[in-house]
Length: 169
Image 1 (tube, rainbow, N blue to C red):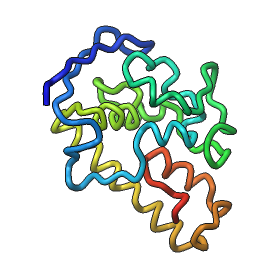
Image 2 (tube, rainbow, N blue to C red; image 1 turned 135 degrees about the vertical axis):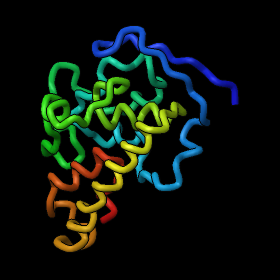
Image 3 (tube, one colour; image 1 turned 45 degrees about the horizontal axis):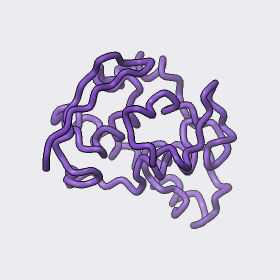
Image 4 (cartoon, helix red, strand yellow; image 1 turned 180 degrees about the vertical axis):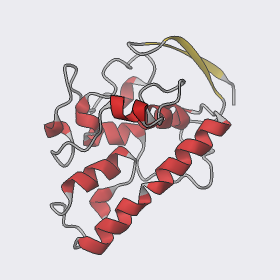
């Protein structure tokens, strides 16, 4: 695979560069098996449509073709389950969950990882965080009838934000 350098100039990063070293959507850590791709997540409706509104130059246009986006502010009605299920970025910063390379958080890391960027230490940290969210899958399985999309909608939406397909639980 020929390596490619990506240069990011959006509202949160100017001149940030990273190299794509792995094939798109492949060569993932064996412990990282997300159910959904970033474009699938954007199409379903995540983060109130606000997350990627200024990132069109960094990611393929196809990711945004069917994305549910809200350029002005987050709109929970755009989320698949129609409910808010995110904490503000300020909370993520305060808890130390934000890495300087990915100032928007986990989903930005996942988008870049999916495209082929690899940062070994950060990848391990984010994959560990992703795996910890699995506890919410177990809670849905224990408390909801399979396929009941109205049961624990906020928890289901939060799982979508972490690339778990909670529609299938």
